[in-house]
Length: 348
Image (cartoon, rainbow, N blue to C red):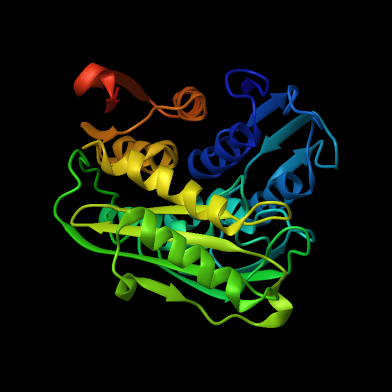
């Protein structure tokens, strides 16, 4: 039984999600205490509980402490079962985080699985759908794990109501680790704006402002048609597709935040990434660690990647992964005055 203190390091919900994912993949049970102890509302919120319930259903786990606000959880996994699943957060809580919880186990199952998820699809504190589809899924595909993601309906805070479908195919063979140290040549860059139930002028202003800030031609801007009942909500997204990696930058509009401020937020994040040479941005550097570690666990050896920033979130994730897998992470500052990081992962 692996014992984990949920308040260590960054101390957020990712400790729970990583523990659930790796318990399913490895068959190892865990006890998690002090869940989100440092947060204003500690314990399991509804989206965290949905992750627990989803993992329980996928592997037939025996669970204690799976209730709202619980600060401790005991999870004893059974064998992972491929199949058709439907999970609904029931609020605007992120359904993409639920998907990331069950995705690793289902890609290592013996047959394809179809997963339908309901909740928030574009949340400020979670990977938006387009990040999963364009940044995360292509890297998993290179590992040997195919998945098709479809956005059925947008879901924003506070209404939620979004819908995602994922077809997760089992890996063709053992997962194959690889290095991601260079971006490669830039193939395409574009921006799009989602603004359901808001005046069309909102999307237009955000895109025009972003165009001016980045000095992009208007041909790279896309105002996306949305349904009125998918909002109100607003997400401005810029995508940089390189030869070896795609990065997605997102900012959210909310009451009291001007279109110019939303555009400026995206521009700042994109410029910070463009200013460096490392392959992965801070979010992808964090989320890539788990599937890469699974590949190293299966194949052995080592692999590396470069990133523009190594966040406390990522460091905490490394520590949790190392509790479940015989894999070790190390990080070394590289570039001008440590402006980037080289992350090395090796199987023991």
